Length: 240
Image (cartoon, rainbow, N blue to C red; front, side, top):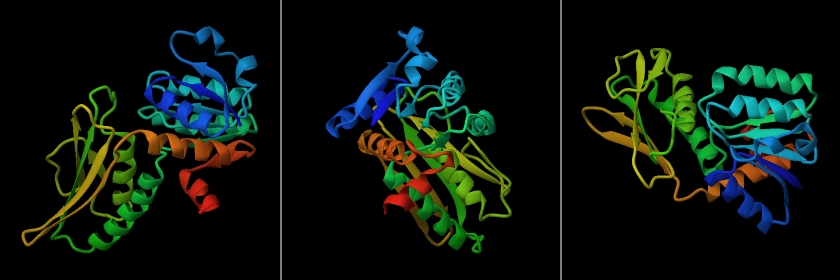
């Protein structure tokens, strides 16, 4: 598989390491120092584009890859107000697109656990639900994309809660998310259910970036010859 890495920071380098170990080829690496190489001609040499950049440029990067007709996966967060536009571009260019707030297989299983737990607790109002996420200080967005996905999963089962807020104090109609930035911390997400009688917590902690990188490669392999809009659940269901 020929891969274009759009964004060559810590995640891009982790993906490159695992990709090369598995016999894949990195045919293009783009970062802020070589944007002159970010052309349709160069992008088109790839079987798939893997985009991990930052909120300011993510949609621009994704658009260029999709307009080149190359299947694209993205793990950038903080740009999702334009997600529908990206999906439209994908369809217009007859290619494939997959966005995930987190590509880790463990996290995606945790998403499903989170929804099951939320469904169980939603009928027990004596338990107050709240969230906490911890990442390294270089992470620009807060709450994390993973935390937002978890929060949306909880809100689907709580008709009494209308939105999440990035604050510790929340009223009965809000889901509070506390964001902490501490080095070194690849990522920890906690969901708390507290009552006067007891407390229950579910938690996922990433020990390094290998899980994210391995999941991104799995998604890239899945999407390389497809057309349409996909999610990580499609990837997991196809392999397991």
